Length: 300
Figure (cartoon, rainbow, N blue to C red):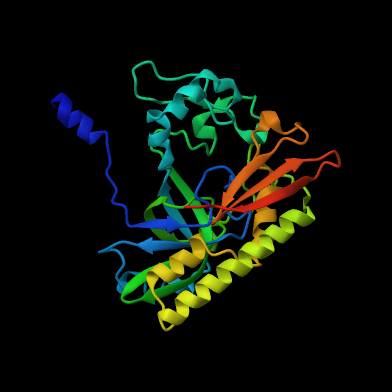
């Protein structure tokens, strides 16, 4: 067998069947596991996989498995940020200390945030994004399946994927075989500890003003379009339009403490999470709470 044929036999190509459309466009702030935050998002199916016939029967299941791709990893390897992270690799919560010298980029060990970002374990004993296949697997709640203008949108909640994530496959979650009540979970036996989150008055007023401004803008657009539903309208609402209910979601995301493990003791150090069309700044205060200090509209 030639070297080229051997290489082809070592690879598997999977089609991208859709893209994840979500309020979180950056990795910072995204839940580290599925179902930790009831974050609503949408899978926009691509042709020919967006035919409604392919989804007949799926709505009888409450949850589904999603196979997806860590699409930011290729960018991570190529841009200047990678060079900076290599220079300060001990400060990165998922960074490996061992890199394959053959140039494959394989990282056999990682530092899970759950272990404080200091202890190393094998990549196959983790759910780290830095894995050979760059594939993720998540079980999420199926909220509904929408067919708009002949196209399928799969509305889900609880995803740990960011906006733009390529979707590789969708399968139903089958409780009798997929839920193992006596399973052993290694270093992750229980859900992570949640921190209390508060918001200062100024930040709350900023949030309210942005919600009011966007509601007025969207009402004007809907009137101009005769409130006709479209795929773009559903996705825009998921990705961009800020609503009052989003404040609880923002607090739930911050309560997971997205800060790097090595910086979790720093008081009054501001961190910023991009959510929909706003940047939400927060910091750790002396009481041990994470305090939201500003909500600022993102200018495109």
